[in-house]
Amino acid sequence: MKLTEDQLASFSTNNFHYRSLDLLRVRLSNQRLDFDDILRKIQAFQIAIPSAALGNGRAGAKMHRTGGEPRNLNEKLEDVGLLQQLTRKTNSISVYIPWDMPEDYKETKELAADLDLVFDSMNSTSSQDENKRKYANLGSLGNPDKAIRQEAIAHNEEVISIGKKLGSKGLTVWMADGSNFPGQSNFRNTLGWTEESLREIYEFMPLDWDLMLEYKPYEPNCYHTVVPDWGTSCMLAKRLGSRAKALVDLGYHLPKTNIEQIVATLMYQNLLGGFHFNDSKYGEDDLNPSSIKPYQLFLIFTELIGGDQDGAQAWESISWMIDASYNTQDPLVDLIQALEAITKAYAKALLVDREKLNERQQNGQSSEAQEILQMAYLTDVRPLVCEARLRSGGVAEPLEAYRILMIRNKLVQERGAKSYSYLF
Image (cartoon, rainbow, N blue to C red; front, side, top):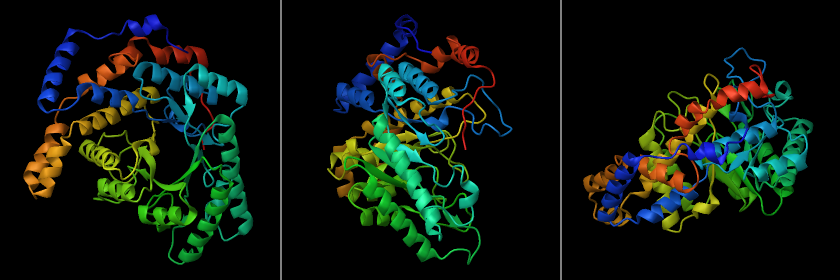
């Protein structure tokens, strides 16, 4: 379904918003911050939606089903289009293969164009597809059996070919290869085979594509993972070539890891490929972005903005995508909340007085430097985020509009209460 202009216009803002915005404008002016420039940057910031996040997970699993879930890639595009109409924060979709195979490329591309959407990086699932049982013990791209490695390479090459037809410009590879017991795998051999496989994939990619390597210290294996950290990911990227970079999944780091320092280090080397936005309480990475560690997300954006301004790595070279699991709630509601949380963290980071912060850092004034960060973080940026959304054609309060328009109920009527798409 697609919302009409009249429906969107009925959710305009009120006088309280404008009074709040005027107060914030005065405050930012006193801090010598360019109010309109900040609004333009918030408007321009777009976050891709993964095709895997628009339903309630595995079709065969016994879990809560929202109803009205998209049954194919085209219906997932329609749902992202709805999110874009409401939030003006997501102009792209990141497709997982083979979970969301296009049925008709021409029709899919025309639908995306009609919804003003583009295709972000493609995602391979070489260790999670129909061959999962075959890969379970010895892996995919790092499997000792060359024939199995070639199957996994062929899968990634197929994903690239599909992405070329859709207009994508990148591939994200997460390797779940690893082991559960000491002695099960040869660490060096597995890493070497993985590099050889990635090199074939890298050389198969078009020259205007980027390869992003995701790392995780564990999952699904509990003893060792072939690419467990950002250092290994960077090493592989450097050995592959300039179009290979590391992808940071925020939820999957060991306890107490300083992720903002990792981000700064990657930017220092021009090796930051992009983000999977999520959060974690213990170890899993499927919680809503900023739901547990909002200050950490703010600090990460502070480093990202600083790295761009200092010329370490251009903002435009970085990819942004949500990667969380919405198995017990309405996925569209959670995605709206996620987009809002990410945007607020970014907006707060834009308010950091860089000149003063640099001066305090140079002089070793740690408490004063911390106060500068705290001043930005504690600012209520909701009026800024709302105004940026309104200026882009969205609604003042996306969740309120979603519920009042009873969008989920209408999707259930269109698609059925038990609709779903195939998902691992």
